Image (cartoon, rainbow over all chains, first blue to last red; front, side, top):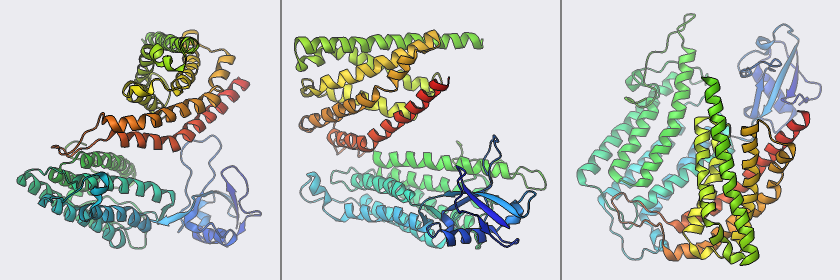
Length: 310
Length: 221
């Protein structure tokens, strides 16, 4: 069959189109495009069916494993596919590694090295136990994140645009510096012993719960990277859709209860807003997919992200 | 009921736009008068009250956007009003040493001409239902000059204020305190300056896009 490849403005991306076998898959098409235009490796390609003129809604995205013939409406010999260049892509592992590396390095620098001298604070620094525990807690957290990235998470998309590296690193590294500066400050005021213990203990329990949530999510996906949706279940997922975000938010709350800085609480609020956004999207997606019709199970009533509030 | 609310909205917005228009007209009038009579160092004292009133009233526009009274996206109005309020209250009012600088003249003249055009444009649309094409053209063309002059004045005045901010230690919160919080107005002002670097091309580009849309629409209308 012949595939005509056009850009969103209608221009032909590959003159004359591409000839493929009738049983070819979308993946074969992607390889063919990459073969003709070297810089467009498959993860950079977004292939969709053309939208009917005047129709609303999102275009249908071609799935790599599907056969091209499945997308042909009537004409089995000709298919027009719309191409969009997603820009330079990096793997999610790369993205997560770099954004987590910043906090993992910057925080200990503020703890161990005399950086505050450059801000005008001379002399010896008294280090409180809470500051040392905070260092361990923080580093454990980001070490855990990096480990999960390489050994636990199964990503729905293989790659992310390069621009996200800069955006995400700016977010994590800036907030990491902002918090590290204040917790390790020579004029830091610690909270009481009991409050510190409650904070770190609660946080640690949430971090371990978060790890367990990630293991559950991992097992929802097959290793072949199907990326299909399933109803999460087990542990906290029985009562809240995004239990992984829930435990992450409460874990930061534990850290803040123990360390008590405005910087930490600002980060908590911003991170919670971002995760709540994601959680709503995921919750509605699952409710829409599992509507109880045509033999599909119905998505149960659950909290979205932060019981007992939302 | 709907018709009544819609009429109420129109009356309110007409009143709002024309009132603020008068405020900015006063700013321009007193500024030019002071320039001719006393020179650049006297401009601030002449315009202070109408400037503070007219610019602070603009906070209402964020509210208008949030409740849906007007269509403007909050994302475009917030940085604009933020920088204006920072200059009026955070720099000129807080750091008196900046008030006699010549950039104050270019600042208030750039701002007032822009705002006079903008508020009369919206005032006419709300009150009369339309705005004359020459006003539309002014609204989407004068920014080509006034944005650069205004932004340069803003950046320049913040820069001029920096040593005074550092010396006065104004608005600074130091540690130790119970919430382990610090705020340094000097560094915050430097960050504000840094935001102008990506922010100015972004705003200018946004207005260029608006200009294209508005002027081409009027041609076909």
